[in-house]
Length: 264
Image (cartoon, rainbow, N blue to C red; front, side, top):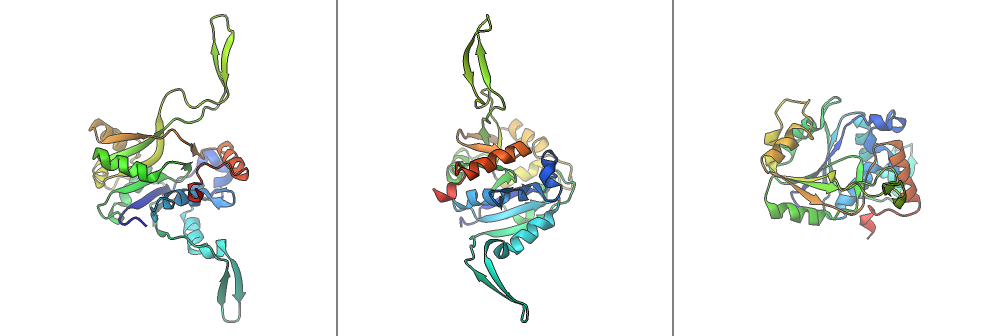
């Protein structure tokens, strides 16, 4: 475990665009390969030694609490002696994780959730991400980049895969090039893996649960020259819709999982 470096994960949203799954569970608990996508994200960080987590809960947050409280039950074979209420675990798998689970409110926006975690972050640099995206990003390189520029925050920038095939046509409509689902159109977007210094809390008003992290705080940090982008041109995928989930499930089933960095 890397001392004093916490990983904050936003895990409290409603996940309305994945309602087929989130009607009964919070989005971070939607499973890929039989494990919550939240578990996959935590495994990515812990592969690089970042194993102290702060989970910002909201919608159905009790399910996240119960999952980690009963983690051994989920991962191991169990013998239960009903007479003396004794449990014996077999082949149990554990993780070297420390997990703080914070209820940050049902309706709280992303910026408000982050602000509520301020007192748990001990005035140190911390990692921050969403509870629905996976990547093969090297977290140590990301942290080194952040420390190198000395500003308040680093945002990972990615170029997502296009949804449709791309055509290159001449004036006579002759197709000279076709690329199925190319990467982006040259634009970089927010990839959701941040490194933050404590100064970022100055950009989130206290007591304002309606503050959206991607609006006032990030816009203010960019305006003041405190926001740097770490360009990642490797694998990145956000589980935003049922289609995205099915794609990740397909990759997992074929063992085509670039984000499975803990096995490399």
